Length: 280
Image (cartoon, rainbow, N blue to C red; front, side, top):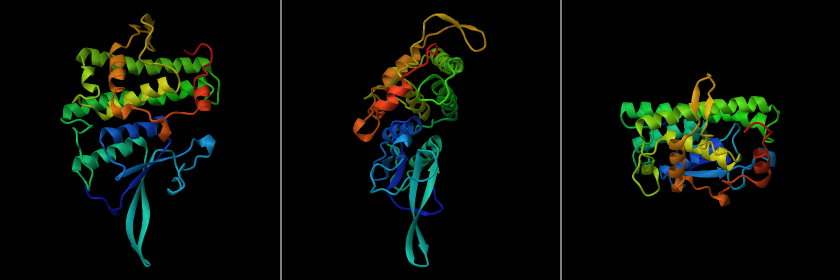
């Protein structure tokens, strides 16, 4: 792979370390064993706490939503050597970009394990099927928490409850596919040679975020017959998702490190777990 400029190292990943979209990139970096000599994580304080780079020795955060990957590039100008920055925004764009660099083994990036975007054409398709649903869950969670908890700005419990049903719809689709394919979750456990994908990282990050931050384990169903958003009767249980969440959670990449800002503070946690009556 060739970039339209000569890139210097290290690159900087500006992130709110405990929040969902930066969190998935951090898990990806650990899964790929990308060292901080190539990419350094730059923690930024929560928006309500100033939204500033925690360590002032780093350049100020770029404008835009986080995460943002900042790539220093070597340039020439009338004064001689200079430097400027190229930015890659949006978590999935960053992950896809880094995956390509690793697959191409570009200037120090390497793939110590299997590629995480699928191998064969069919593997890529299966990976993207799960990825699309995991993304749907993450997006649909926003109105759930906005309307249903003190972390939001508008109290609308009925709306939050309805959107929660749509999140469970996507999870039930994944659950059904995995049951049909009898996916072996044991291969995801720490110390195994299991095949982890970008979809696995994205789905795990969603399940971890809802449980750790909002106190809701989305892998636990009622076990009762319920009607889905289309009025169909289903049994609400997620045994495969529960196995997946437990197994992936044993991996080193999944460990939250409080010293690095990967755990939310007491105030946001209290607001996130203050649910309106009737939502859950």
